[in-house]
Image (cartoon, rainbow, N blue to C red):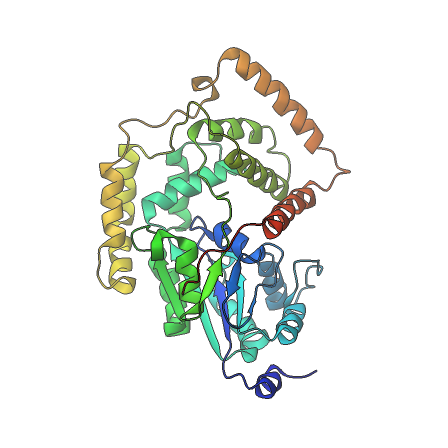
Length: 383
Protein backbone atom coordinates (compact mmCIF):
# COMPACT_ATOMS: atom_id res chain seq x y z
CA UNK A 1 0.00 0.00 0.00
CA UNK A 2 1.26 3.48 -0.86
CA UNK A 3 2.08 5.48 2.25
CA UNK A 4 0.52 8.85 2.99
CA UNK A 5 3.98 10.41 3.18
CA UNK A 6 4.66 9.15 -0.33
CA UNK A 7 1.40 10.61 -1.60
CA UNK A 8 2.19 14.00 -0.06
CA UNK A 9 5.66 14.09 -1.58
CA UNK A 10 4.26 13.19 -4.99
CA UNK A 11 1.61 15.93 -4.77
CA UNK A 12 4.04 18.51 -3.42
CA UNK A 13 1.89 19.03 -0.31
CA UNK A 14 3.62 19.97 2.93
CA UNK A 15 1.27 19.43 5.88
CA UNK A 16 -2.03 17.82 6.76
CA UNK A 17 -4.00 17.84 10.01
CA UNK A 18 -6.14 15.41 12.01
CA UNK A 19 -8.76 17.04 14.23
CA UNK A 20 -10.53 14.93 16.84
CA UNK A 21 -13.53 16.63 18.46
CA UNK A 22 -14.55 14.93 21.73
CA UNK A 23 -17.55 16.94 22.93
CA UNK A 24 -18.32 17.40 25.80
CA UNK A 25 -21.90 16.28 25.74
CA UNK A 26 -24.43 19.13 25.70
CA UNK A 27 -22.03 21.52 23.98
CA UNK A 28 -23.45 21.59 20.45
CA UNK A 29 -21.84 18.40 19.18
CA UNK A 30 -24.91 17.51 17.08
CA UNK A 31 -24.72 20.87 15.30
CA UNK A 32 -21.07 20.26 14.42
CA UNK A 33 -21.65 16.66 13.35
CA UNK A 34 -24.73 17.44 11.24
CA UNK A 35 -22.88 20.18 9.37
CA UNK A 36 -19.87 17.97 8.66
CA UNK A 37 -21.76 14.78 7.86
CA UNK A 38 -24.13 16.55 5.45
CA UNK A 39 -21.28 18.23 3.57
CA UNK A 40 -22.37 21.76 4.48
CA UNK A 41 -18.78 22.80 5.23
CA UNK A 42 -16.67 23.53 2.14
CA UNK A 43 -13.05 24.61 1.98
CA UNK A 44 -12.23 27.43 -0.43
CA UNK A 45 -8.98 25.60 -1.24
CA UNK A 46 -7.96 22.09 -0.33
CA UNK A 47 -9.99 19.10 0.80
CA UNK A 48 -11.82 18.23 4.01
CA UNK A 49 -12.75 14.64 4.95
CA UNK A 50 -15.36 13.67 7.55
CA UNK A 51 -15.52 9.86 7.32
CA UNK A 52 -18.82 8.96 9.02
CA UNK A 53 -22.52 8.90 8.19
CA UNK A 54 -23.34 10.81 11.39
CA UNK A 55 -20.71 10.79 14.16
CA UNK A 56 -17.77 8.73 15.43
CA UNK A 57 -19.20 7.75 18.80
CA UNK A 58 -19.35 4.13 17.63
CA UNK A 59 -15.52 4.08 17.54
CA UNK A 60 -15.37 4.04 21.32
CA UNK A 61 -16.44 0.38 21.25
CA UNK A 62 -13.66 -0.32 18.74
CA UNK A 63 -11.11 1.39 20.99
CA UNK A 64 -12.31 -0.64 23.97
CA UNK A 65 -12.19 -3.93 22.06
CA UNK A 66 -8.69 -3.19 20.78
CA UNK A 67 -7.39 -2.29 24.25
CA UNK A 68 -8.90 -5.44 25.77
CA UNK A 69 -7.89 -7.78 22.96
CA UNK A 70 -11.54 -8.55 22.24
CA UNK A 71 -13.17 -8.98 18.81
CA UNK A 72 -13.97 -5.64 17.19
CA UNK A 73 -17.59 -4.72 16.48
CA UNK A 74 -18.87 -5.37 12.99
CA UNK A 75 -17.76 -2.87 10.35
CA UNK A 76 -20.92 -1.17 9.05
CA UNK A 77 -21.63 1.32 6.24
CA UNK A 78 -21.09 4.85 7.47
CA UNK A 79 -19.27 3.54 10.55
CA UNK A 80 -15.74 2.63 9.37
CA UNK A 81 -13.45 0.89 11.84
CA UNK A 82 -9.85 1.99 12.34
CA UNK A 83 -8.48 -0.03 9.45
CA UNK A 84 -11.14 1.27 7.09
CA UNK A 85 -10.54 4.80 8.39
CA UNK A 86 -6.86 4.52 7.52
CA UNK A 87 -7.75 3.33 4.02
CA UNK A 88 -10.20 6.19 3.49
CA UNK A 89 -7.70 8.73 4.78
CA UNK A 90 -4.93 7.56 2.46
CA UNK A 91 -7.22 7.40 -0.55
CA UNK A 92 -8.88 10.78 0.12
CA UNK A 93 -5.61 12.75 0.24
CA UNK A 94 -7.35 15.35 2.37
CA UNK A 95 -5.76 18.43 3.92
CA UNK A 96 -8.01 18.17 6.99
CA UNK A 97 -9.56 15.02 8.44
CA UNK A 98 -12.17 15.63 11.13
CA UNK A 99 -13.52 13.07 13.59
CA UNK A 100 -16.24 13.90 16.11
CA UNK A 101 -17.64 11.84 18.97
CA UNK A 102 -18.76 13.18 22.34
CA UNK A 103 -18.63 9.61 23.67
CA UNK A 104 -14.84 10.07 23.84
CA UNK A 105 -15.08 12.87 26.41
CA UNK A 106 -14.64 10.53 29.36
CA UNK A 107 -12.69 7.66 27.80
CA UNK A 108 -9.52 6.29 29.36
CA UNK A 109 -7.07 8.93 28.15
CA UNK A 110 -4.00 6.72 27.97
CA UNK A 111 -5.91 4.10 25.99
CA UNK A 112 -7.12 6.79 23.60
CA UNK A 113 -3.62 8.22 23.18
CA UNK A 114 -1.92 4.88 22.52
CA UNK A 115 -4.47 3.62 19.99
CA UNK A 116 -4.55 6.93 18.16
CA UNK A 117 -0.75 7.09 18.14
CA UNK A 118 -0.50 3.63 16.61
CA UNK A 119 -3.28 3.71 14.05
CA UNK A 120 -4.01 7.30 12.95
CA UNK A 121 -1.41 9.83 14.10
CA UNK A 122 1.39 8.46 11.83
CA UNK A 123 -0.60 9.59 8.78
CA UNK A 124 -0.64 13.27 9.83
CA UNK A 125 1.80 16.10 10.37
CA UNK A 126 -0.45 18.03 12.78
CA UNK A 127 -3.04 17.08 15.36
CA UNK A 128 -5.70 18.92 17.33
CA UNK A 129 -7.85 17.53 20.12
CA UNK A 130 -10.77 19.92 20.65
CA UNK A 131 -13.30 19.96 23.49
CA UNK A 132 -15.95 22.35 24.79
CA UNK A 133 -17.07 22.70 28.39
CA UNK A 134 -20.48 23.91 29.57
CA UNK A 135 -20.51 25.71 32.94
CA UNK A 136 -21.48 23.48 35.85
CA UNK A 137 -25.03 24.62 36.62
CA UNK A 138 -26.02 24.77 32.96
CA UNK A 139 -24.50 21.32 32.43
CA UNK A 140 -26.48 19.82 35.31
CA UNK A 141 -29.71 21.22 33.89
CA UNK A 142 -28.95 20.26 30.27
CA UNK A 143 -27.84 16.73 31.18
CA UNK A 144 -30.87 16.20 33.42
CA UNK A 145 -33.13 17.21 30.52
CA UNK A 146 -31.25 14.96 28.10
CA UNK A 147 -31.39 11.95 30.42
CA UNK A 148 -35.13 12.44 30.85
CA UNK A 149 -35.50 12.54 27.07
CA UNK A 150 -33.64 9.27 26.50
CA UNK A 151 -35.32 7.44 29.37
CA UNK A 152 -32.43 7.31 31.84
CA UNK A 153 -33.89 9.64 34.49
CA UNK A 154 -37.32 9.55 36.12
CA UNK A 155 -36.48 11.30 39.41
CA UNK A 156 -36.17 14.94 40.39
CA UNK A 157 -33.34 17.34 39.52
CA UNK A 158 -31.98 16.95 43.06
CA UNK A 159 -31.69 13.19 42.47
CA UNK A 160 -29.74 13.77 39.28
CA UNK A 161 -27.43 16.27 40.95
CA UNK A 162 -26.74 13.83 43.80
CA UNK A 163 -25.97 11.05 41.33
CA UNK A 164 -23.65 13.30 39.32
CA UNK A 165 -21.80 14.29 42.48
CA UNK A 166 -21.32 10.67 43.52
CA UNK A 167 -19.73 9.71 40.20
CA UNK A 168 -17.87 13.07 39.98
CA UNK A 169 -18.93 13.43 36.37
CA UNK A 170 -18.97 17.22 36.36
CA UNK A 171 -15.75 17.83 38.26
CA UNK A 172 -13.96 19.03 35.16
CA UNK A 173 -10.43 20.01 36.16
CA UNK A 174 -8.81 16.58 36.61
CA UNK A 175 -10.18 15.28 33.31
CA UNK A 176 -9.28 18.29 31.19
CA UNK A 177 -5.91 18.65 32.89
CA UNK A 178 -5.25 15.03 31.94
CA UNK A 179 -5.83 15.83 28.27
CA UNK A 180 -3.58 18.89 28.51
CA UNK A 181 -0.81 16.91 30.22
CA UNK A 182 -0.99 14.36 27.42
CA UNK A 183 -1.28 16.65 24.40
CA UNK A 184 0.01 20.05 25.51
CA UNK A 185 -0.85 22.84 23.08
CA UNK A 186 -2.47 20.33 20.71
CA UNK A 187 -5.37 20.15 23.19
CA UNK A 188 -7.83 23.03 22.85
CA UNK A 189 -10.57 23.62 25.42
CA UNK A 190 -13.24 26.20 24.70
CA UNK A 191 -15.95 27.53 27.05
CA UNK A 192 -19.50 26.84 25.89
CA UNK A 193 -20.60 30.43 26.41
CA UNK A 194 -22.17 32.43 23.59
CA UNK A 195 -20.20 35.51 24.58
CA UNK A 196 -16.93 33.58 24.20
CA UNK A 197 -17.69 31.71 20.97
CA UNK A 198 -16.69 33.03 17.56
CA UNK A 199 -19.74 34.85 16.16
CA UNK A 200 -21.68 33.41 19.10
CA UNK A 201 -21.78 30.07 17.24
CA UNK A 202 -20.29 26.77 18.36
CA UNK A 203 -19.99 25.67 14.71
CA UNK A 204 -18.09 28.81 13.67
CA UNK A 205 -15.93 28.53 16.75
CA UNK A 206 -15.11 24.88 16.16
CA UNK A 207 -14.27 25.38 12.49
CA UNK A 208 -11.99 28.29 13.35
CA UNK A 209 -10.17 26.20 15.95
CA UNK A 210 -9.98 23.17 13.64
CA UNK A 211 -9.12 24.81 10.31
CA UNK A 212 -7.04 27.77 11.46
CA UNK A 213 -6.46 30.24 8.62
CA UNK A 214 -8.10 28.06 5.96
CA UNK A 215 -11.08 29.79 4.35
CA UNK A 216 -14.37 27.91 4.25
CA UNK A 217 -18.08 28.37 3.68
CA UNK A 218 -21.04 26.83 5.52
CA UNK A 219 -24.36 26.31 3.79
CA UNK A 220 -27.41 27.26 5.90
CA UNK A 221 -29.14 24.41 7.67
CA UNK A 222 -32.12 24.14 10.02
CA UNK A 223 -31.48 24.25 13.74
CA UNK A 224 -32.58 20.87 15.09
CA UNK A 225 -30.72 21.31 18.38
CA UNK A 226 -33.59 23.25 19.99
CA UNK A 227 -34.01 22.88 23.74
CA UNK A 228 -37.19 21.05 24.70
CA UNK A 229 -39.66 22.79 26.97
CA UNK A 230 -40.89 21.50 30.33
CA UNK A 231 -44.22 20.33 28.89
CA UNK A 232 -42.53 18.22 26.20
CA UNK A 233 -40.08 16.75 28.70
CA UNK A 234 -42.96 15.74 30.99
CA UNK A 235 -44.72 14.08 28.06
CA UNK A 236 -41.58 12.16 27.05
CA UNK A 237 -40.98 11.09 30.66
CA UNK A 238 -44.48 9.65 30.74
CA UNK A 239 -43.70 7.61 27.64
CA UNK A 240 -40.20 6.56 28.71
CA UNK A 241 -41.58 5.45 32.07
CA UNK A 242 -43.44 2.69 30.19
CA UNK A 243 -40.26 1.49 28.48
CA UNK A 244 -37.93 0.80 31.40
CA UNK A 245 -37.80 -2.91 30.58
CA UNK A 246 -36.47 -2.21 27.08
CA UNK A 247 -32.82 -1.76 26.19
CA UNK A 248 -30.93 1.49 26.55
CA UNK A 249 -30.07 1.80 22.79
CA UNK A 250 -33.74 1.56 21.87
CA UNK A 251 -34.86 4.12 24.49
CA UNK A 252 -32.01 6.43 23.52
CA UNK A 253 -32.90 6.19 19.83
CA UNK A 254 -36.57 6.81 20.55
CA UNK A 255 -35.78 9.82 22.73
CA UNK A 256 -33.49 11.31 20.09
CA UNK A 257 -36.12 10.88 17.38
CA UNK A 258 -38.85 12.40 19.53
CA UNK A 259 -36.61 15.35 20.34
CA UNK A 260 -35.87 15.96 16.64
CA UNK A 261 -39.53 15.73 15.70
CA UNK A 262 -40.60 18.13 18.45
CA UNK A 263 -37.86 20.61 17.52
CA UNK A 264 -39.16 20.78 13.95
CA UNK A 265 -42.81 21.20 14.94
CA UNK A 266 -44.45 24.55 15.69
CA UNK A 267 -43.88 25.40 19.36
CA UNK A 268 -46.55 24.77 21.98
CA UNK A 269 -48.85 27.63 22.86
CA UNK A 270 -47.89 26.93 26.49
CA UNK A 271 -44.12 26.56 26.66
CA UNK A 272 -42.16 26.67 29.92
CA UNK A 273 -38.38 26.93 29.75
CA UNK A 274 -36.45 24.32 31.74
CA UNK A 275 -34.71 26.02 34.67
CA UNK A 276 -33.09 25.40 38.04
CA UNK A 277 -34.72 26.46 41.30
CA UNK A 278 -32.81 28.52 43.83
CA UNK A 279 -32.11 25.94 46.54
CA UNK A 280 -30.65 23.54 43.96
CA UNK A 281 -28.69 26.30 42.19
CA UNK A 282 -27.17 27.31 45.53
CA UNK A 283 -26.25 23.69 46.27
CA UNK A 284 -24.67 23.28 42.83
CA UNK A 285 -22.65 26.44 43.40
CA UNK A 286 -21.41 25.20 46.77
CA UNK A 287 -20.49 21.80 45.35
CA UNK A 288 -18.65 23.04 42.24
CA UNK A 289 -17.20 26.44 43.14
CA UNK A 290 -13.69 25.11 43.78
CA UNK A 291 -13.67 23.22 40.51
CA UNK A 292 -14.96 26.32 38.70
CA UNK A 293 -12.16 28.44 40.11
CA UNK A 294 -9.58 25.79 39.25
CA UNK A 295 -10.88 25.65 35.67
CA UNK A 296 -10.74 29.43 35.35
CA UNK A 297 -7.15 29.48 36.58
CA UNK A 298 -5.93 26.52 34.52
CA UNK A 299 -7.70 27.08 31.21
CA UNK A 300 -9.15 30.60 30.97
CA UNK A 301 -6.27 32.82 32.13
CA UNK A 302 -7.97 33.53 35.47
CA UNK A 303 -10.98 35.11 33.75
CA UNK A 304 -13.84 34.08 36.08
CA UNK A 305 -15.92 32.43 33.37
CA UNK A 306 -16.93 29.28 35.24
CA UNK A 307 -17.27 31.00 38.62
CA UNK A 308 -19.36 33.83 37.17
CA UNK A 309 -21.77 31.35 35.60
CA UNK A 310 -22.32 29.62 38.96
CA UNK A 311 -23.19 33.00 40.45
CA UNK A 312 -25.48 33.82 37.57
CA UNK A 313 -27.29 30.48 37.95
CA UNK A 314 -28.20 31.41 41.53
CA UNK A 315 -29.25 34.93 40.57
CA UNK A 316 -31.57 33.74 37.77
CA UNK A 317 -32.98 30.64 39.48
CA UNK A 318 -36.69 30.09 40.09
CA UNK A 319 -38.16 30.38 43.57
CA UNK A 320 -39.65 26.87 43.45
CA UNK A 321 -38.91 23.64 41.51
CA UNK A 322 -40.60 23.12 38.18
CA UNK A 323 -43.47 20.59 38.44
CA UNK A 324 -42.58 17.30 36.73
CA UNK A 325 -45.80 15.39 37.46
CA UNK A 326 -47.98 14.87 34.35
CA UNK A 327 -51.06 15.92 36.34
CA UNK A 328 -49.62 19.43 36.61
CA UNK A 329 -49.64 19.88 32.83
CA UNK A 330 -52.39 17.77 31.31
CA UNK A 331 -56.12 17.53 31.93
CA UNK A 332 -57.60 14.16 32.94
CA UNK A 333 -58.88 13.65 29.39
CA UNK A 334 -55.46 14.47 27.90
CA UNK A 335 -53.79 12.08 30.33
CA UNK A 336 -56.26 9.36 29.37
CA UNK A 337 -55.32 9.78 25.69
CA UNK A 338 -51.60 9.89 26.46
CA UNK A 339 -51.80 6.76 28.62
CA UNK A 340 -53.57 4.89 25.83
CA UNK A 341 -51.03 5.93 23.20
CA UNK A 342 -47.99 5.25 25.40
CA UNK A 343 -49.31 1.78 26.30
CA UNK A 344 -49.81 1.01 22.61
CA UNK A 345 -46.35 2.29 21.67
CA UNK A 346 -44.75 0.36 24.53
CA UNK A 347 -46.40 -2.84 23.27
CA UNK A 348 -45.16 -2.21 19.73
CA UNK A 349 -41.62 -1.45 20.84
CA UNK A 350 -41.51 -4.60 22.96
CA UNK A 351 -41.72 -6.78 19.85
CA UNK A 352 -38.56 -8.85 19.70
CA UNK A 353 -38.72 -9.36 15.93
CA UNK A 354 -37.98 -5.69 15.25
CA UNK A 355 -34.51 -4.07 15.33
CA UNK A 356 -35.69 -0.77 16.77
CA UNK A 357 -32.25 0.61 17.65
CA UNK A 358 -31.12 0.21 14.02
CA UNK A 359 -34.45 1.64 12.83
CA UNK A 360 -33.93 4.82 14.87
CA UNK A 361 -30.33 5.13 13.71
CA UNK A 362 -31.47 4.78 10.09
CA UNK A 363 -33.89 7.66 10.65
CA UNK A 364 -31.00 9.77 11.96
CA UNK A 365 -28.90 8.94 8.91
CA UNK A 366 -31.86 9.75 6.63
CA UNK A 367 -32.09 13.18 8.25
CA UNK A 368 -28.41 13.79 7.43
CA UNK A 369 -29.12 12.73 3.82
CA UNK A 370 -31.95 15.26 3.61
CA UNK A 371 -29.60 17.96 4.88
CA UNK A 372 -26.99 16.95 2.30
CA UNK A 373 -29.49 17.16 -0.56
CA UNK A 374 -31.04 20.47 0.48
CA UNK A 375 -30.55 23.29 -2.04
CA UNK A 376 -29.47 26.14 0.20
CA UNK A 377 -26.94 28.75 -0.83
CA UNK A 378 -23.62 28.70 1.05
CA UNK A 379 -22.72 31.43 3.49
CA UNK A 380 -19.77 33.70 2.60
CA UNK A 381 -16.31 32.26 3.08
CA UNK A 382 -15.02 32.51 6.64
CA UNK A 383 -11.97 31.52 8.57
